Image (cartoon, rainbow, N blue to C red; front, side):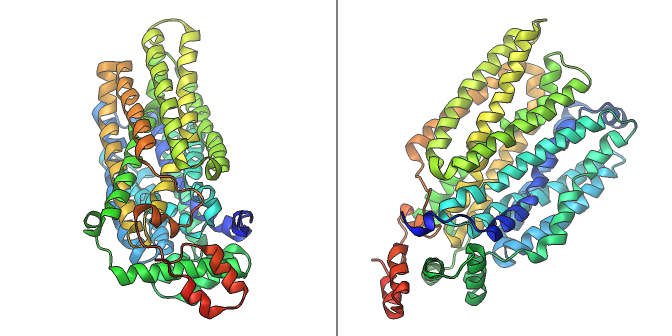
Length: 491
């Protein structure tokens, strides 16, 4: 085992990854807040009549804003840098929170949700890329997975805020939770100046000295392995830039990029087709359908919100050991079984007075988020940026995330209507999609754990000019600079 694979993560890398992930709270808070806000009686009275179609619009228009935010980030992350793009997202999120909290009619609330979606689209695309690019290869899953961890934490936090506010009176019951979205945006804005630029982005802009300085700080030392990592990044990026300047068309024109984009789209699609966000957004309706009432509904939402982040911690601890592929397909099978149980129990006990059966139904709804958080929750954020080359990382990631968002929009709009018309039978759709996802991952997805972002290109048939970091380290340690320059090429 090479020295780099036994080295612990430097405290500075932890600090940067954790701070960037504060922006990830926005996605979790926005998702959790809407599920509890639409259950508050004061909210329903203020916006009466609040029909299923309006409810679907309030939830799903958030996704429409996300689409535009993702495409903006696809441009901004490359041209402005990951750091500045995150800062722009924070400013927009602050404005969105103010609009939503101050809403006086449903149109203003929906407008605020669209603006908030734009901000979340920026964060959801840029933060996983940034954290992937600052992380050491042997712990990239852990650092990149912080995005999903903070999304889950934000979701749980929002649910408990909703539960606490359900005991309040008047418009505070729903305005305060919506205003709470401003907090992570303010934290990011105050601290963004201390966040370093991504070293790979700096190298792409030929700011080599700055990049080397950042890498040294991220690794906490200046030795042969750090300089070898710098050489690998620099030479591979220069090689790729000499080959071609990537545009949007190159996502399709180059065979290796087509495979990358297809895999990225599939993992994002299977994430939404799991049914997780249908349960997340409409869980309060599910509890009401099982006979729960009053504060019990928001309390269950709060407990549900804690399950995911706790399970996700287990995933983050082991993801660089388990690998991405195995975790994804096993998770898909487990979610299929769990969804079948939720469907069967809902059909059998939903309209009965059997509280044991209803309790079992709620338990398996909780179990679903636990299973999802052990696998898909973090890995779809980890896998997409790491399979992309630097030339298309922002563009390819944006395409896959837009696919995720579009599927989410469809489900958010049709799910209230589907539950209203077919009830528990709606779960059958997700039983099918989860098993299809598990089979596809098992037979088609390559494993990427432990490889540097540059080495992963070899999986897709790209030329990798610095494939053996151990050789580079040895040459640097021997102070044989001339040999280093020649040994880095691999034909």
